Length: 143
Image (cartoon, rainbow, N blue to C red; front, side, top):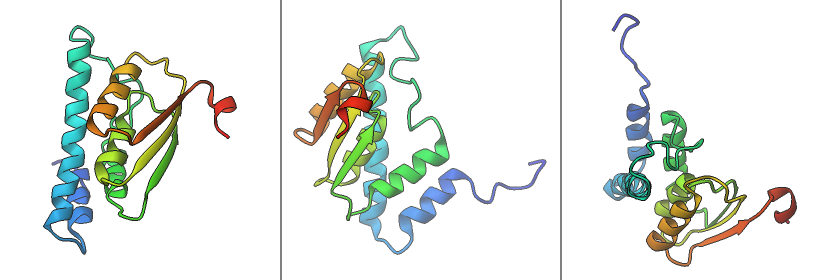
C-alpha cells in the first residue's frame, strides 16, 4: 500500500501469539473462542432481525486489536474465575468462558442494554452453570 505493508496486522499478531510456544491444540482453542463469538452474534441477529445494532452497544469485539488480546488472555490456563463489571450483551463473557472449560464468570451489570437478556440466555445455554450475573447498580452490588 501507499504506506508500506502492515507488519503488525491484528490477524498476524493473533497467529503469532496463538502459536508461540504452544501446540496445535492452542490454535484450535483460539478458533473455538472466535466461533463462540460468531454464535453469539447469530443469536443477537435471530432475536432482533430488524435491528442490526442489537447487542452491539460498546462490545469488547468492536476493536479488533482488543478482541485479539482478550482471546489470547482467555486461553490462559491459570485463570479460574473472572469478575467483570459490565456484562452488557455477554461478548467478553463469552470470550472468557470459551477460553477455558473450568473457568467461571462473576458479572455485575445494570441489565438495561437491549441485548442483555439474549446474551445472558446464550451464555447460560453455551456454558451452563458457569455464569453468576448480579443485576443492579455496580456501585452498590460489587462487594
